[in-house]
Each structure stands twice: as C-alpha cells, then as structure tokens.
Length: 206
Image (cartoon, rainbow, N blue to C red; front, side):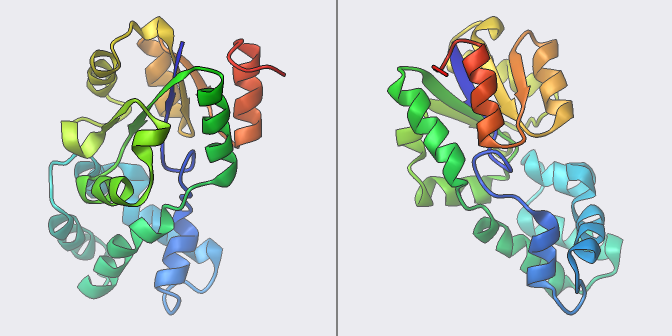
C-alpha cells in the first residue's frame, strides 16, 4: 500500500478564519468574524479561489475578482493572498507520522489542491523530497479535488492501481471522490486518529 497525504489542514496548518483575523484585524476583530470573512473570500474553495487552485487564473486575477465580488479594497484582498504561505506551517504531529510511515518502509505521496505559487513556496521551504516519493499539485495539472480527473492523474504518477492507495484528506468531498475511484480513504481530523486508522489497515503497529 502507498499512503497519500493532502496538505492543507493535514500536513500544513490551515486556519483561514485565524488568517483573516490576523491579516485584517481592523475588519475581522474575532475568529467568528474571521470565519465569516473566510467564507466570503475562499467560497468553500469553489468559484474564484477554485480557479486559482486549479491553475486556471493567476494570483493577480484572483485578487482582482475577489475584490470586485466582496467590495473589499484591492490591497486588503492582496494582503490575504500574500499571507497564505506564512499560514502553511508544518503540523509537528503529522511530520512525526510521516517519519514513522517511512521508517516502516512505506512509500508516501501527496495530492494537494494548491496554486502553483504556493506549491513553489512549499518546495523551496520544506523537505518535500525527503518526505515523499512524488506528488500532484492541482495548480500544475489543471485539475483539482474532488474532480475525478486529478485522481486519475495521481494514479498514473504514483504508478499503482487505486486499490493500493490510502488517502488522508480533511475534506469529506475529497474522501468520497477518492473512494469512488477505488482508493481507501480516511477523513483526517488529527494525526493521532489518522495513525489509528493506519494501524487498523495494518500499515503501522499499535
């Protein structure tokens, strides 16, 4: 079996409500207000941001569209987009899980909805090549989860049949899409629970 990791909220911290409250504190004074702002800004990763994730529009274009849609000043919208890489910090417990899986001899890959500029940042900043054999970023292949096409791309790149893949992702829609392709999938909530699910599948010792 090969284990495939999502990135946002799985390997890397992703707390959009806190991000907006931190970057635009005059506009979002509480986490609750930040959550409402994040819903408007990211649109559940559909709409403008989904196109950016998929590599179909540029960062400057997604900023322009969000500003036009929300009525927020262009500079504020740009500041949020520019701060996203600083939000993507490794989650220590997941890094430990990755090291444990590698020590047990398992091959690891990643499948992430990630715009190309942010993918470039992660590759420059963190040892992805040490943690993973290979991976797929949505912004580079022009498909994104939960579209079936990105799972097909991943299967070809990872070089195995779907039933040989175990996928860890925090988004229920992505888990369902992976299962529809014949992958095993675990909805990620935190590293300890993911480890337990991998123990059940015989990939790690209890």
